[in-house]
Image (tube, rainbow, N blue to C red):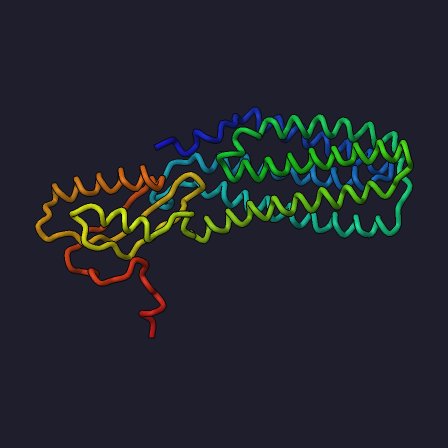
Length: 303
């Protein structure tokens, strides 16, 4: 099994670099937006201000997730990163709602914009945001916490690019309405991507089963001649990389402890190879629960 932190591939210096870049962009875009009168620059500044806090939160969660398991946290602290991803995405959605409201208002009442200052600041913003995004890109494929932060970087890169395009059009044709229009387009994309991250994090925090058919798992286990029934199954994710499986199995009464150990090893290997399940807990029984269902129906037992 891969080390649960080997996929992150982010050093402390990279986190520090991204934080510094976003803090610098925030100041530049706020000042440039106020001077030029550009909503696009101001909204980009808000993005980057929140992104600076986002990177700090992600870094803290990343450090916490590395802590060893203990008596209080027997599964470890991996879910600190899941919580950070959820918080970051929720904050980003709140910000996009504000930007959508402001963008619609600006569309109805276009304001004068200094296209020259807007263009200069947007070029700096695109370059810095693109660098931040590239720093986060590789690890974003394997870690929801880093993915949420990467989405912030990608959103700001697109937003800055939109501001750049708007600045060019304003300079060439005085199309001031392009500024709020591109803000709305960028906000819609950010919201879509953020909802995807929230959907995944909520699924993990609610301990929902991953995309694995329980009945297929049951059929696979029943192919082993030692097993006569599988019941009280639980399948969930500890984080995006660790899938846990817990089940009761009914075995033939002739099985010895040595044979059971061998059977457990077969089950672990089978579940790992066919379903990617990497944490298995099995309780062997003879007759107890032999007629129980695959999933234990808690509500059916309440009076």
